[in-house]
Length: 240
Image (tube, rainbow, N blue to C red; front, side):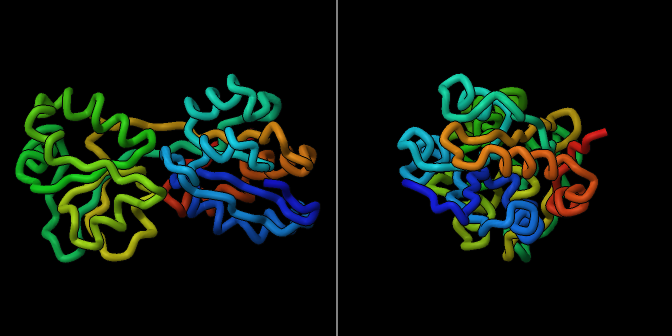
């Protein structure tokens, strides 16, 4: 898909979406262009970031978890130049609104809550991989929990499915859970189980305006952008 000269095209994973949307007016002022959100899905469907990039769709900047971005660079889909960490994110969970607080503060608390849950959801991104391949194994409950756990893909947020009443427990990045209406008790994982993920921004290999993309990445690491990033539930990575 081609881009027009007055568009600045962004592909961002869900974890950074709330911060990005809050900062969009400043990005438009900085670039002098209309900011276009190409996709906010890092999953595996046709509209996901990996598949859009592989099809050659234009992205001026790409914002995803560090491991994913480094793979995009290795695959020639994103430039190594200017690729940098812009935020860090913690993983958390939520339950439907109106549900009592599960009072999870320790690993033992989380083990009990997961064993008691009837339907658990996890994302197709970094947090989902951690949940299915490490978290439940560390808790010693993989055999009991994974059969009643569901992958939420297709660009849909775990919190949205919780709010519909299809799940009674769900995991995702805190910044992806916070904007969702109809869920409650959004809580970080206990410290001994927490996984902090770094999110990076890079310039798309086929960006028609690499100069503007470089300016945007620098802005996302600036003190001016930090408040919106922090308000979204992320820890900003500020240039010193």
